[in-house]
Image (spheres, one colour):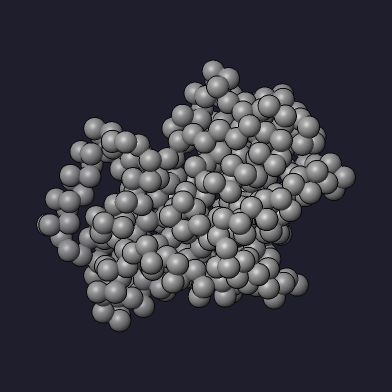
Length: 338
């Protein structure tokens, strides 16, 4: 999921179709996301579409991963106004909005799902402070939501940072994520998502990370042998609108979009409960020899120590604005803890 020098022929053809649709129907809004229809972003998008179409005269056309190119392609299309809505992880937005990399500071986010649900919904940093940062890039931030605890999948067992030594570990094209895996002891290797399965199959890379549901739906378990929960992160994603499009709407349409975003958020938080466990069961059934390990606090010690270095790198990269965002997120996490 990184920028291609050219959108593929198939994606370019689809893009021409999108432009034709735009000319034909101003009331058809286009929404692209980074996953398949039956994955978490796809489920959120379908609920959003349902709410918009039930409460307005507009319709939503959905474009799952690969339809219009890689992640960087759909972001460019959203900024250009070809797409009205886009769902993209801060992992990919980090080069555009450096402060968004805060979601990759290890051990910043809790693993408790209920706490996470309150945090994303009530956080001042997300719902106020990030608004201006996204607006500067021509984007209206509608919502951020969690997709699940991130797990490492590797070819060899991981019990400590030493076990990642010289492991070529695929990361998104995100500077702070590169720093994280370097601090963990691995050799971070940025790759677009479309190259990950083949890269693992041919041993170009030996590991990658993603939330549990994605490990099953993309069959990454077929080309790795060990799933390890280090507790270091929860995958965050963000739904945005093209700002010129959003600002040009009347108040009724703006309210409908905000209401649809909130309804889809409540839906996806409920949908995710128990999802990791059910998908792990499917992986065990498909590949009984797969090892699944949750590291103890003692085993996590080296990763937590490395997290201090990564946090310092984040502040170095983003300066005072990054420090302010980090401080506010920490305050928001404390305020939503129970």
